[in-house]
Picture 1 (cartoon, rainbow, N blue to C red):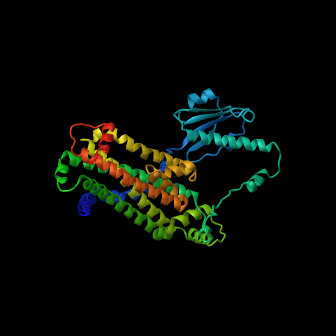
Picture 2: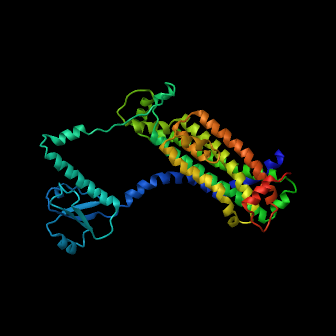
Picture 3: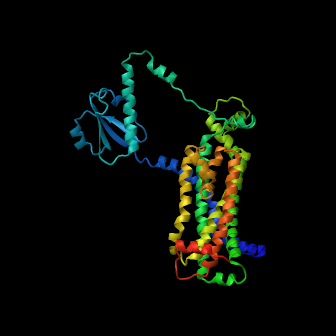
Length: 436
């Protein structure tokens, strides 16, 4: 039995690893992940367009002189009536009108645009006007050196977070919520992607082999259960190899490349923070640098990722294989896929609750329920949750796989010989109750 399964695993593994799509995906995915993180900043940087000229009609005489032009907007004070300006200044982006009673009536502001505006542009204009009005109201109190006082009072607080349930050595370096949130979101999304892509790959492979009648030939030499397990483990090994390659790349970048690229001041500050020495560098940035260059932290994340990718894939691929054996085409599988897809989507939604509060009851329970635990638990692990919760989640996940593969095998035994009819969920339930 073990020899038959190993032969099928080897065949499935070689067939997929040799594909150009596997090599391209393995090499490009880290680049795409970095691109997804950098893209929003680039889009914001290059989506502003040309500088917009805005003519200002200020009847109060207080606001216009204090409006600050920038790369996005250029303010020009004019001495025209509103209607005349609207008719004659078609070459301007907009006309901004400010009423004479702006201090007592802050709503007496109107923007006449010659083209559609954006929420961000309107917010930038109103925020400047609000700041001017607030400053003018403060001047009414006739406080000497008001600007100097405000500058001295303005304070920015950078807070470091430490864990009381850690040893003194472990608690020397703070825990960065920024790193935990970013990693939690990325890891949860990676699990979501793997479950969908590789689970569907197993289902499609079974459907293709069933339609070509290859399965009928293969079951004459191996049992249906061995065939299903070999296919599941073969595709799982491909997923694990891909994750392992990504893990090595990330581990190498974090341990060896990143320290060389970081400014010397940041690296020295991170080392000083770990040693408990005070430093003038932003503590939040130091926590980020410390976490991303911590080999032990990265190794823990990588090992947990491997375990949950493997366990989650085994659980869901058994269900996808059962669905593939019961239908003749991918189109017929859509209806049967719904009950399998819902927990995966639910896990992705629960990931948002984890980011909001990783220790909430809902986050805990969805991270131990096997159908959602791969995604939700991987989103919680960067927050340094207790190890017993991770172990409990893994035990339940792998135990559920054993039960699910036993049930899926019953559907698989019947389904691979059924043609021309799409079974209902009720019929699938009957197949699972058959005794062999």
